[in-house]
Length: 443
Image 1 (cartoon, rainbow, N blue to C red):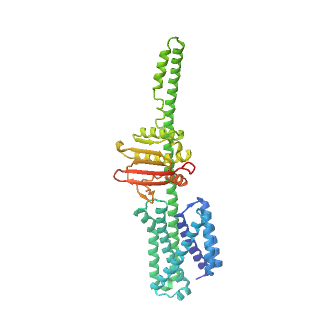
Image 2: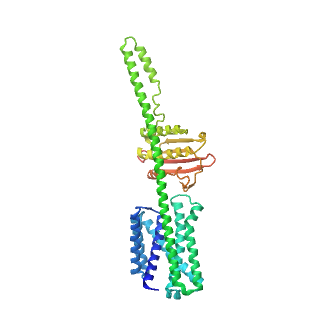
Image 3: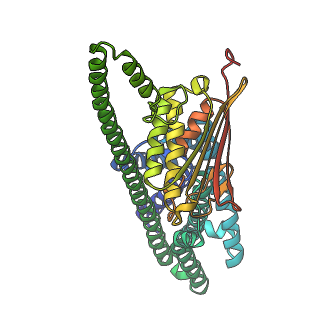
């Protein structure tokens, strides 16, 4: 085999290993960049790893140490992760590739009757085996990434999703093993079969890259759904505030008329009694109709009454038991983040229930001497899958409950709160409850 072809084969093997690392790390961490910038980062990694192999390929321990530094630095530069997590991920990947190479090479040599010394003398056979091994390792990484995506991102992984991800890599592995079997019968064709295996591995590489691209496009589509939901909520908010503004204008207009009547009664001597009766009648009027829910916290009052109006417009029963929330241990912006996301998710879930009689939201908030408590329960049209106190979202029902909860978790974690997410099948209800400790100076 020529030096040029060996150089190409080695480069392809490095690219495949780097792409396997890319697949693994994208299943764990969020990328900092998108598009061409991500491609530039991957090109930089591949170039440096090629340099590392060609200059330090024969130095085992030194190569591993330099690889650990290179891939850790690259992971921290391209992804949102800490150095500890990056180091652990790189160590796992190095161990996976190293152990995989050794074990699979031993299996192939045993199955074909090749000795390791004989294998190393024949470049065609060596690269044929190497490409088959990388095809098997790529299939393992694809399966591992699908599992990590299911458990880290908390998105349900159906059998159809799994088959769609692994069908092409599995088929490539089957063809690669068939080429090994053909090599056993005709050893003279080792170099040609190695080239065929390299082409298959490149196609496998391209299919995995295409899967990543489609996943990115699906995420963009997912984000568009979120944007449309947020726009819908904002439109609902605008309509509610417009109705409230119109009502306020009517009350202001009526108030001006009441002042004119009082002014006229007071001007007329001997009509003080009638003026007092008129004032008493006005005092009995429900002046709190604009804000039926009151918590002694203005921003919360405005938000809750806004959501109450939206619930009424959607024929959703909104129940509430609210304490004086002036001492509730969250700042206004954090409390609004928690309540708006929880109530919006509840409204969305109830809206999907066909029977209006089943559309119920129950909000309870209590403030005690040592802690405050938040409880919200709503009926649902579909069962809610929960794992590790997190909701598992599916592609079909991803807009129910899932959006915004990450912000709720972040706020409550920052406040050292204890919270629980549960689904009660008997009531077909989703429940979110939290206990938020009071600050030390207040407790």
